Each structure stands twice: as structure tokens, then as C-alpha cells.
Length: 178
Image 1 (cartoon, one colour):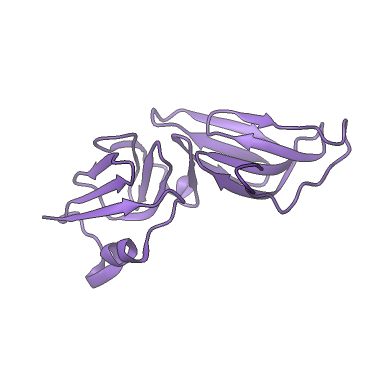
Image 2 (cartoon, rainbow, N blue to C red):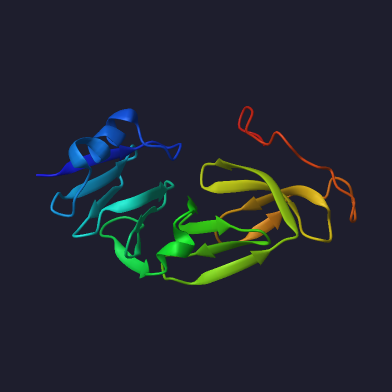
């Protein structure tokens, strides 16, 4: 009948779920697969090629296979793009999938719209819920903390005003705060 994989809120597969997908030759398209969040949101995978990469948040599940990139924001998956090489080293944030390259963040939404967020240099990053936090230098503010939700990139604070840098590092959550 297929497998149901429960996704953790931290964006990682449990050891049991990883064994379900990797064991005995891995998942094949003849085996139905359903992803389910702990909150009960269900993402059935219908007739898809075996995924090479999974990425998810509480709002969306992304599958990157050898032939296409698919997304579900609840319910059936749909193909967003066939540009697999670009999106293979990616991560989900909000309902979008993003990649970070040398000088920009690039995101793709469930409709296939690509948005670019240029910067001079990025250093550390971490995820908190459906948001990704970065230490970025945009060429104007120096290295400062930035928040990315897959749709917008926002300077959170110019701690050293102007082109100087506060050099935020060891980014993370403590008691619910960045």
C-alpha cells in the first residue's frame, strides 16, 4: 500500500523515516509515498520519479528528482520546473525553495516564479521555523543580520550604522529569540 513518512518540524527525517526511504533499494515510483507533518498536513506523492532530495517547512514539501522539481503546499504535488541541476543543492523556506550562490539568494515559489536577492557576501545562516537568518553584506550596511522568508529578504538591524559591520556570528535561537 505504500509508505507514510512523518516529517519532523526541524526539517530532518527521523531515522525510521530515512530507513523507510533508503531500505531495500529505496523508494520507487511503483510504491506510493505520503508525507505527513505532525500537525496532520498530508502530502501524497503520486506517480513521481524517486526523489534525490527532500526539503520542507510547515507550509510546503519540495521534491527534487533526476527529471523535475515538485512542490505541494498540501494535497497533490505538481511540477514547478525541470531545471534540476540548479535546484538540487537547495533548501525550503516558507513555501519557497532557495539556493545561495556566490552573490545572491535565488528562490522559486510554487507557481514557478524565480526571485533574486543580490548581496556582496554571505556568511553564517540558520533556520528557525519557516524563516532563514543570514549574516549578509549587501554592499551598503556591511555584515548585519538579515531575515529571509522565501518571498522577501529583510535587514533586521543595522547594528553598526552605515558601511561598517557588526559581523553577527554564532547565529541561532535562544529562548525563542535570535
